[in-house]
Length: 111
Image (spheres, rainbow, N blue to C red):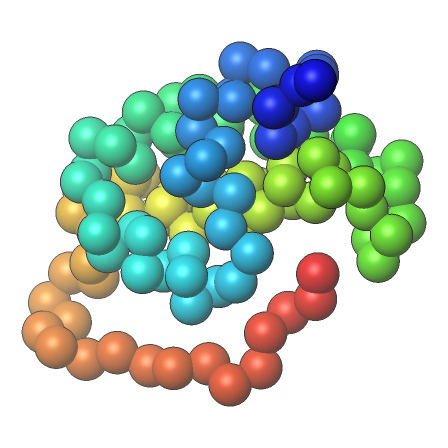
């Protein structure tokens, strides 16, 4: 019995699945704020080179009927998007010079 969370083709990203396969945007944002830039950099370095492959793989399926492993892969891509600006631009988990400002979303994208 396999405990893999991702499709077999993305086995090298599996070490990040438990932490970053997060189903909601609010939870992904919270994980970003609770992570170090070093943790995000490791995830980014592993996932960024595979994002086009991930999207090509996901395009083989109906968006609203993704199997569990593909849905996890989509969540991993969403998490990559969530950490990309902190890693590429800000070099910190929070927005530069934002103080204590924040916003809450009331609608969640689907899936």
